[in-house]
Length: 354
Image 1 (cartoon, rainbow, N blue to C red):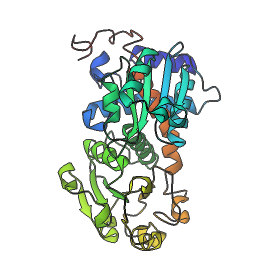
Image 2: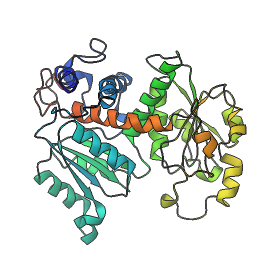
Image 3: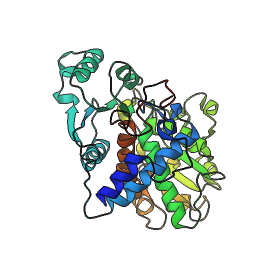
């Protein structure tokens, strides 16, 4: 299985072959810093590439040498468990040398600037750097100072592109199992409820879901609804019950307490009463509506346990599974130019990579 996965990725003849531009033109970006930079076919390309890794990860032997000899640095300036673990597993299953740099262990704590850190990371000649940072725009800053691909693992309230991609892949698989599968989500109504104002996951998902044809509703208390959200194409709601009417998918988000300065809600009990997803409230959505959550969950606040654990409706654990596959696909695709794969050899602007 490892050799099959390696061959498919290396040749560019894997899933989706013939449906996308040839070679590097299928994904003409040196880094992945946000969904906003991507065209619809580029999103679909990453999802198609991830499919082989979904199957690969379900095999007993989950190791290949595709990225053997390459070094990936996971530079996390913000605490993380799930995302860091997912990226680490993805890199190691591809055969790369993976090094984790935690903020608590870094020179940033000693007063080093972000720019100095970027220069230091670049001098170590990593082949890819995965960045999570608490400030919006920090990933773009580092991306402009290093010579290797950069993957955004979340920057402030800005974007979290691999989360949106894994959510799309999880949703596609769930719909396929119901016999409702299609290449995109045209006609699907998705409601995202929670702390929209502080959520990078919400922003990336709004962009990704709409690029794939879904209609997106966002619901939050007025204090947690960003001004001008309509400019992104999402339809805002303050009344959760109204937002749920006819929704095919309900994605719940946690309260981002670490990004809040001040009192945004009266209490978590009041918040649950108005915006918590209960079984009774879920009945307002479309029959068999799917439930999603990027994690970590605050059970009893934004979602009840009996909803989160519904075997026939909740795809929360599937989202976790798809995260590894999507991140494997991203690491594979973004390092193809450095690996000089056929069709990916040219530098930016030559037509091979434009």
